[in-house]
Image (tube, rainbow, N blue to C red; front, side, top):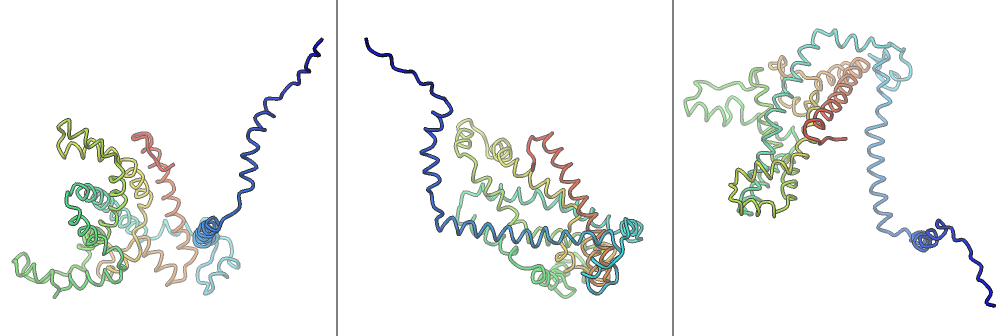
Length: 330
């Protein structure tokens, strides 16, 4: 008689583990290469930068709830001042200048959102429709260059051009549009100056992300549209714009969340005593009261208020965008 072979039960999990174990062992034996170390160092530098300049300063937010105004040493204001609760917030909201500062901030940012936000998108679409690559590159270089100039340099050039004896007033007088030189430093011209200068400086650079998004669209979509007899306008409306819609929504939400951020260096360059009624915004207000007048707690409360509004607007904008377009930041 042939003896029966004993049947040993095989655990399926052990069988699967035996198949995976060579891969796992091979993975464990993999050494850290020099390229991985370099990549780790680069990432670590970014993390350290964010931790030092973004998260560590958050400790100073406690000044918004303390009586730290008037201290010469800000560390003494943080650690030695008394707790004040929400008194700084109440003082900020009851400030006589609060209404004008908020209206200037929101009004100027709303105009920039309506004008300066869509124009880089339109510029990127028009740029992508140019059939001549050399002309396209020349236009890109010309429009990108102002972004690399600081607002002090760029603003100084603009102020020289719009001065009473500058080239702008000279042209306006020679064309008979005005009889005498216009003082563009007055309050009534401030918002227009800010919008036009920010557009000239940032439109080219702001279009880069949209140019990249348009370059990533499948060319076969345009070829199929051409075969169906679609015009250039139809291709823009039905292919280009829907394809870059997620990018547009993302940057629109971020722009809405920054409705209280005007950009200090831009406003400060063109601000003077004549146009303060239209040029005083939250950024300049916080600088003058916090740095110049040493009202640390008062201006920290103002900055805290601005941050809370930004977070709320980011959440609301993201919720609305997800409900309407299906795209959002998170």
